Length: 369
Image (cartoon, rainbow, N blue to C red):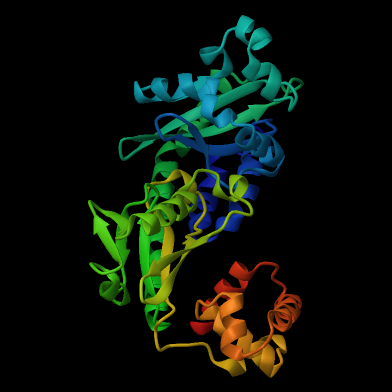
């Protein structure tokens, strides 16, 4: 390692547990010390290579391409490295997993690696809870291939990376528990999910919904009506999806559970962000339940003070937040549909939202403040 030995990174790795924003700089310094373009932490879910976010700055664009172009689902390096790590190998370099002929001819090397000038690779395997992780380094053509001798000093970091991953999982769990308590204080039901979508914990406010609108079946959250459950499962899948920040931009993070004869329930998803959680199996997301039929409503004065809404706009916004559609609001307030649309357009401008669903979500969040 150039410039700094691996011991230089020990304290910084542990500090990053509580300061997730430090990861890009730590990984970048680690890459520089190894004369590499960048570094990242990776894992596998059995069929795909998962890259932990954040990565070092030099890999941001290549990794985004790795995700959006689908290379993570056909990762040649991962397909060979993960089995080798499971069999007991701890250090691998490019020459261990690909031949010169493959590097000249394979689509993986020519369509992804070559355009980004990342032909050379090295990884250190780390085992934790029957799952394999890897500290990955990437070099360009000028920097040349990594050797086993160059990789060997990283061995000092192996047990510490295992401990850091365990601490990150614990920190994410504590964050999730704090969020559950906060939601309880805001009179909101909340359920914490792990990286596979299984229920870890829920707060007491959730209990009235269980057996009525929602169930926990074999550790998984379900809506009782099939149509409602389809929407809920899609929401959960989005919240725990690999590379959510890169691949799910613009996707809806809420769904509605309809109840015949009653006002609907709005179910929202919130990611638990603790650094590296997207490759770990611990706390990953919160599912927050807002009962539109609850007596706890939105204070009209909050809407007026926060966004400068007129009394007419406040009335319309509150009706929308209670689950009415625009035609129902028009009829209820005894105004024309044209007037209702005019008020809605003004509300959009003042609240800086563009869709009615976003407005409903915003109103319900304010109801919990």
